[in-house]
Amino acid sequence: MTLPTIVEYSTHQTQVASTSMPQPSKDMDYSHSLEQMNGGIFKPVEPPTRSTGRLIMHSMAMFGREFCYAVEAAFVTPVLLSVGLPKSLYSLVWFISPILGFVLQPVVGSASDYCRSRWGRRRPYILFFGILMVLGMTLYLNGDTAVTAIFKTAPEKKTWAIVITMLGVVTFDFAADFIDGPIKAYLFDVCSHEDKERGLHYHALFTGLGGALGYLTGAIDWESTFLGTLMGSEFQVIYFFATLVFLVLLVIHMCSIPEVPLEDDKGETQSLLKHDHLKAYGLVDKSQNGILKTLEEQDTAEDTDIQVQKRMTLKSLVNALFTMPAHYRYLCVSHLIGWTAFLSNMLFFTDFMGQIVYHGNPYAPHNSSAYLIYERGVEIGCWGMCINAISSSLYSYVQKALLPYIGLKGLYFVGYLLFGLGTGFIGLFPHVYSTLVLCSLFGVMSSTLYTVPFNLIAEYHREEEYEAQLLGKKDKESRGKGIDCAALTSMVQLAQIIVGVGLGVLVSLAGSVVVVVISASTVSLLGCCFVAIFVRYVQ
Image (cartoon, rainbow, N blue to C red):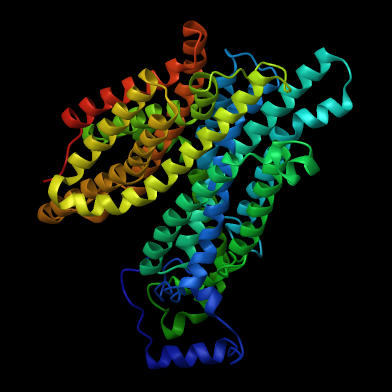
């Protein structure tokens, strides 16, 4: 809460304060308390400027997270199919995690705001979800091997391999989705406005690089190397590199920038400093006698506010989806369409390469030529995903050059159009080299989804703030950026739910995974029409 007036200390009030309260020691450090103050007499202390090296260290978590995400995207579907999961069920793996995320993510975000660990508010959650990510990778990349060593009969082996692998996928996906929020909040907590922009730039850069390196690692034929012979299989080699890279980079991230803990006794400090004015000379005793009562009342009020905020977070998000202005709602729908198309293709692309382009069979015995051909297709699919990640990083710079000429509307339309055409040609003409070339268009869509919708949100708010100033309205009457960004981001999880429910049914009905790529193309081309007709662009 920011005070409306600045406290002025009169001479006699200063004398009273000096006689009634002990003088603080000169050695006492108030820097942490000042940084934790949420308004009051003193304005919030601006965090110091962070060096480029510190910001790069902070971005290492995004590199490691995206590296592991690339491994998951490349190998989860082949792993699930290799342990015997039916085609009609394998897309349901992607359905469980987004349900948990949509329900629990706002709760976890609110809980981290009030975490009182001596490590700070965000890093305990980052560490917790990082450990869950490693646990998930351990289960889905090693579950089949562990089950084979424990169980001897084929039915038990197959059942437990499916259960453990699915549990690992859900655990990893859940943790990898959740860790992004505390990482971003950690950056915002410890950086000034200028450093936040620099930090987000490094986050985007190293996210692309991490994805490219992850897909490149998956594209290597580890079976023919000494590591493959030493560790037993390709999946164990991938697990070794993914775990090593992620844990090392997670430690670097945790040590990047000091985080100020949320002190338990900050309420008393704030209460003593939140008076609009000091009491008159004759009312000092009365003021002092009322301090405990005032503190108790304010603590109760703050606890109630915290409980209300935690309880209302998910409800606020859902309400925002139904009460937002029409142009916000249309933007959310277009974002949902885009992510549905993108995820339909990306989550099953390596499986498409193995089955359709290379004509392999994931259900064949592991020592058969049909299964080895399928594995080769998966490796080449990883090269395609690597091209996608590199293309996404490069296209982000191309967008800056194109923006003055075609605007946000042009960028939005072109992103959907190129992705729709690219996936359509891949589905109709599934050849190796043409498919790899067209993978560069996946990066165009990825960069578009990560930038254009949020730029439009910023433009909408800038327009509303300008209109509010003209009408003399107060800032608090305008919409909040946070809830609108949360509503927009939730479309990703809804898209994952749609993909998880729908694609398994489509694959079963069509009898081929080529329907996945054709569906992605169709949805993206429909999205072209939607962003051109319904989405509003600020002139």
